[in-house]
Amino acid sequence: MQKFTISVLLLFILFPCTILFAQCPSGDVKLETQAEVDKFAIDFPNCDKISGKLEIAGSLHTNIINLSSLSKIKEIEGRLSIGSTQVSRADFKNLKLIGGDLFIGSNFNLEEINLINLTTVNGDIIYTENFKIKTVNLPNLIAAKIKRLHFVHNFELTNIDMCKIKKVRSFTLAKNSILKTMCFDNLEEIEKFSISENDQLEHLNAFKNTTILHSIYIDRMSRLINLDALESTTTLENLSVVRNASLTNLNGLKNLTELKHSLFIHNNPKLTDCSGLCNLFNNNGYTGNNAQINNNPSACSTRNEMSSNCNALSIDEELLNNLILYPNPTANDINIQFAENQNVESISIYDVLGKEIFTKKVEASETNITLRPNLSSGVYFLKINSDKGQFSKKIIIK
Image (cartoon, helix red, strand yellow):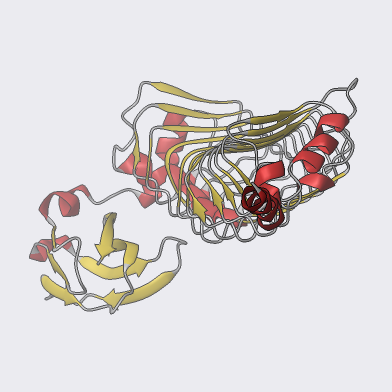
C-alpha cells in the first residue's frame, strides 16, 4: 500500500500538467466575451496549438478588449476569425500557421494586429470594416494556398505588405480611402482582379510582375492615371474600366490579344488614348458580344472610333498569313521565315513590362532569319514591322 501511494505521488510530481489540465483544448474554440478569453488563459496557460478553428466573436455588449492571453499560439489548424471586438492591438507574434481562412472584420478600434511571423495560410485572407487599422503587415507569408485576398472598407489603411505570396485566385481592393502603397513583388498570378474607390491610389505598380488570367474590373479609381503595370496580361475573359476620373490612357493593356466575353470602357472623362487596345482589335482578339464603349472623350467614345484610330498601328495581314515562326516555346533560337515581297524592316523583342530588350534591322534580301537573343526563361513579345504595319507574337523562352 505504501509503495502504491509513493508511486501516485511521484506521478503527480513528474507530470502535473498532464494530470491537472490539458495543454490545449481539442477541436474548435469560440470565445465570445472577455471573461472567456481570460478563462482560456487560466485553463490552458501553455496552449500553443489549436486543433480546429479559433473564433473570437465579440459584440458591442460583450466588449472584448484584450487578446494578449492568446499570444503563445503558434498553429491554428482551422480558421482564425477576429470579429466585432473592441481590441486596439492584437499580438499573434508567435503564430506561424493558419490551416483555413484569416478573417479580421468589424473591429472598429483595431489599429494593429501583429502577424509578423505568419508563414502559411490555406484559405481566404479578409480584412474588412476595420476602421482604424493602419497596415496589413504579412511580410513572411509565403506558403499560402490563397483563394481570395479581400481588403474592403478599411478607412485608415495606408499600406499592405505581402511581398512573398505568389498566386491568388481572386483579389478585391475597395473603399480603402487613404491606401497609398502596397508590396506584392512576387505575386505571379491573379485570376480575378477587382479594384474600386481607393481614392489615394495613383498607380498599380505593386502588380508589375503579375499576370491577370481571367478578369479585370477597375471602377471609380479617382486618382489612377494609367494601367501601365498590367502589361504582362495577354488573355482575359472580362475587362471593365469604368468611372475613373483621372485615367488618360490604356497603354498598360497593349499586350492584350484575346478577350472572350465582356468589354466595358465607359464614363472615363479624361480617357483620350485607347491605342493600348489596338493589338486586341487588330488581331480580331475580341470574340465576345457584350461591349459597352461610351461616354469617354473623342478617340475612345465608341468601338468603331477606337478601331478606326488603330489604323496607324494596323497589322500587316499578308505578313500574318505567310509568316512562319518556330519553335515556340524555345530554349533560345527563334527561326522566322517570310516572303521576299513582304518588306520586313525590323524585328524587336519586348519583355512583359513593354521594355525593348532586343532589336534587329532586316535587310531587303533576308527572308530566313535565326535570332539568338540569349534571354532568360519567361514570356516575351516579338514584334515584326513591315512597310504595311506590324505583327506581334507572344513567345516563351524555356
